[in-house]
Amino acid sequence: MKGQKRNGAYKKRILIYGTDDQAISIAEALNTDSVQPFELVGFLAHKKKYKNIRILDKQVINYNKSLSEELRNYNINGILIIEDTLSIKDKNQLVDECLKANIQIYNVPKVEKLETQKEINSQIRAIEIEDLLNREVIHLDDDHIRESIEGKSVLVTGGAGSIGSEIVRQLIKYQPKLVVVLDQAETQLHELELLLQDEFPDTKIITELANITNMYRLALIFERYDFNIVYHAAAYKHVPIIERNPHEAIYVNILGTMNLVKLSLSENVERFVMVSTDKAVNPSNVMGASKRAAEIYVQSIQEEEKVSTKFITTRFGNVLGSNGSVIPHFKRQIAKGGPVTVTHPDIIRYFMTIPEACQLVLQAGTMGKGGEIFVFDMGEPIRIMDLAERMIRLSGLIPGEDIHVKVTGLRPGEKLFEELLADTSLNLPTHHKKIMVAKETPQNFKNLTGRYEKIVKSALRGSEVEVVKLLKEVVPEYKSENSKFMSLDN
Image (cartoon, helix red, strand yellow):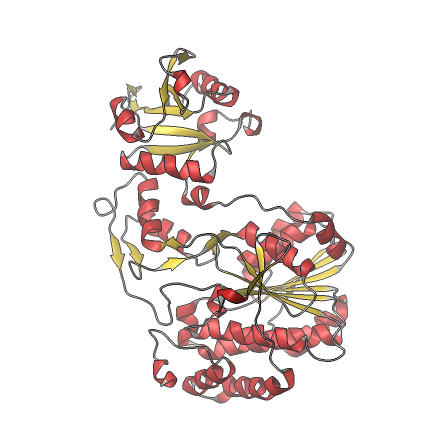
């Protein structure tokens, strides 16, 4: 379907969603833009009172459940949505109707957010999957968070990663005295350092290149900066890679956590907040089991006598746009012309945005009295096959025709679905509707230490089978799926 051809190029025939002042202002801007790829046909409304009327000499078309057929009659190529004028539910419903008719959806900022020095067409973009998965705005207890962070010295491990770097950005607004960003990835740490210097020139931010498995290096850093708060986001997270390299999960996810916990105790850190994963619940792979082992260690040490540090764990699922996550991967595959690869037609996952996850990490970090595992409300799970097909359609292409979806088979250790809680009957509410407490029973710390020392020693010298066998002893609910380690469960 093509629009009207002018100056050798086809203009896309579009409607603006809405008839309010915002919509009219955007329409006026479109009409005065000298060179732009759109031809404004009219306005889309869902109020019957607008029947047979015109605005700016453009027709108003009523939006109803059979929208796709109606738009086809008007030879419409696209619909322009103004930011924040539709709820996520209504936006998804509109998009689904339009995708049936191969009609493109576009986003444009509100009038007050338009950059006046730029033509409006350069500020219009095709809607992306993230726009449809965004969830309701989170309300934080800012005063409580500020009281916890203001004037404090803060360490963020894994600080150059997707979650760690966002934690850094968010906590800075609460005016800490010092933020130390620790990571072993030199290039990412350098790039983040340059960005943070530009974004927050008035905040004291120091980057430290270090590996959390190196206790001596960590000890020097803790002594130098006298931390009040530690946010522990450093971890290995990619299931297939860790399934092939289980020793590394023990080093980083378990030993690294143990090192940080011991130093937090000896240096009298006030709060230690660890980032965990839904893959730690009834784990089916080495990565998830290693994170569950870290959870057990962090929670159980709280029960020891004379422990003044508050040890808190936060557990959530996949985040949109994180390094190596499925959405950027699908975007790359679509850009190359496919195929888009899905491991199983029925696989589902929970998603939340990176800012949302990090906001809740900061909030939970102030709520905990010590020993809690906080679980975040991830909303409804998403079928990955549906996600892939929708992303293809949002790119203006047709699944199975323009781009094929290929089922490749579950990867080693991969589950069809992730759980957030081992037993939903033990899911307790908190005063924040997005945060719950997993009522996991702490284990006796003295009984744990021998097993943890044994598995760390095994990771230094033992075979991978020996390492995984010991991990299953530490985390008895760990049952391998689609993995070479399944025989160890017999």
